[in-house]
Structure formats: structure tokens, C-alpha cells
Length: 400
Image (cartoon, rainbow, N blue to C red; front, side):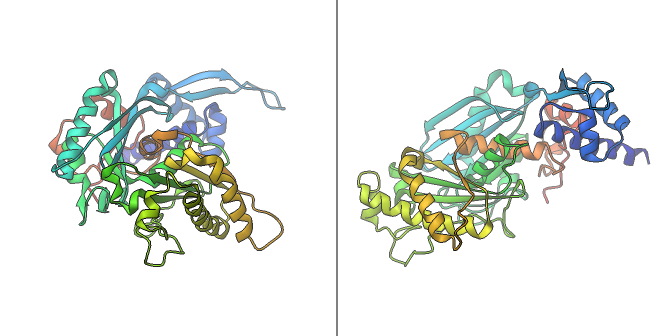
């Protein structure tokens, strides 16, 4: 019974932290109402969180119309822990260090040819270098998110296939990367990571059902062999969480107009794909084909927001009216389409910051990190034990 009581308290701590994370400035009374918990239970747990300095009392709110005490507003201590997000692309990487609110503290970006190194060697060396770079934040690092193009199961922590990373068979990212680093490291698809980033940036707001379109127009030699240098991935969020699909392949894209002649995901030939950056007519054709596909998805699912990120941000003034036109053209009624077109909240570090956002969402939920046998193979850092003690769900799942 004592064990069950402790487990319930841990779960309630996790739920309370998630409410505070989603709604900065919430009160004990608000939390109790939102979660259906006794006020005394909430007050006791919040007191523990304040004493551990993971939560602060920041201000007093207005008293209710019936009078009584003014509620005390609560806020997460953003610097209690930090998360690193890493974007892996052919020939280069980007990384972003964020606090617990998702605010970016520091970024890195550099050309990084993989050459003849294996994926494992490439990633382990890069992550170890980044861990050495973050300095004072190292002791409070709670996890790393790694995002890349491909089919990725972030719950099992397995990469099924990744064309950009040249992974052609199932790759156990958990065993071969995460357990070597010694703290939670979770892989995710790059477009899905961007969607996680927007869920983090807009948490607590009415941004629940949206499509994130990540468009990469790669000019490097390393990227030219991928779809002619043009890569599109989609991230779908439904009811405030990422929709991964039944086999974690939701968001993989090929144009509905693809006829078998195009070099990649669109109907463009190799020469046309190479000219997208210099030929306005070909570029508009690409944008029009993309917009037609986007419009169908948005209208069928009745999504209220569209987020666009990647290299296409350079052309936002060109593509926005095209998307609006195609949304209306695809809609069979005269009522108009209520979908707000937005652009990435994190700019060029959207994938890296989004990978960090994915880790934050898991940290502030009741999901369990796929840590395998990490406790038996590595000494846990002080901060992981500290976070687990105060309500973050850091227990390993046996790698299932």
C-alpha cells in the first residue's frame, strides 16, 4: 500500500507539473479544479515543488467574486533543467540548448561531413562534442532529442529507415546511441520535431489541430542526391499532441501529382529541381504543386493552423498567397476556410528546437523514457535523480 501511495503521489506530481508548464501563472485552486484533486493534495505537492526550487510563487491573482483569499500564481523554474536538441542533415548539423520552457539559450550550426564514418560513430562523436560545449549547463541536462529525415519510432527509440542518414534497415537508436551517452537520448523525425516545437511554443493556447510543413531546398553536394535537393516532410498535430500514425510513418510525403517521371517527391525533373533557386517560373510551379497537396490535407482534416518552416521561409511572401488560393479552390463551400497560415516559431533552428520540445513534452507527461538497462550500465547523473525525486517520470521502461 505504501508503494502504491508513493506511486500515486509521483503521478500527481507529474500531472501538476504539466499543468504549471502548460499554464504559467496558474494557481493551486486552478490545478485542483483541472485535475480533480483535493486542494490539500495539490497544496502538499506544490509545497514540495517550491522547496525543491522547481516551482516559484510569482504573484497574487484577483480574488473571486465571492471574496476570500487572493490565489497565488505559480510558475516553473525554467533554469531547473535544460534540454539539447540536435538536427542531423547530410553534411551539416544544427543544435539548440533550451530551458524547461523551450526558450533557446544557445545554438550551434556547422558543416559536418560524415564521409566514411558509420552513423553510430558520427552521432556519438558529435553528441560528445556538444556535451563538452554546453559547459555549466551539463550538470542540469535532462535529455537530448535528435531529429532527422526518415521513419522514426520515438517511443521504441528505433529508426526504421532514413534516406538522408543512409540507414536502410532497422536501427536500434536506444541501444547503440542512448545507452552509450548515459542520459535520455531520443530520436525523432525532423518534421515531427518541428510540430513538437510548435506545441511547446504555443502550449496553453488554442493551437491544437495543425499541419507543419518542413521544406528543405538543399544546395550542398551532400544534399543534392536527395530528391534533387528538395525535401518535404509533414508533421500533424491533433487535439494538442503529435499524430505519429499506426506505424510511426505519418507525415511521409509524395505529391498526389507525381507521375513516376519526377526525380523525387514532385513532378519536377532533375534539371528543373536544380533550377528552383534561380528560375521563378519553376519555383512557382513547385509552390503551386505543394500548395494543392497541403490544401487537401488541411480541408479534409479541418485543421485550424498551418505552420511552414525550413528553407522555404526565404520565399514566404511568394508562397503564402498561393496557399490561400489553393485552400479556397479545394474547398467546395462558399463559407471560406478558417486556417491561419503561420511560420516557424524557431526560424532556422526549428528542427533542433523542436527535438528539444519533444523531450520537454515527454518530460512533463506520464510517458516513460525508453532508457533500457541504462541504470545498470551507467551512473545516473545527479540531475536525473533530482528530477525523478520531484515528479519527472524518469524511470526506465526496459526498452519496450
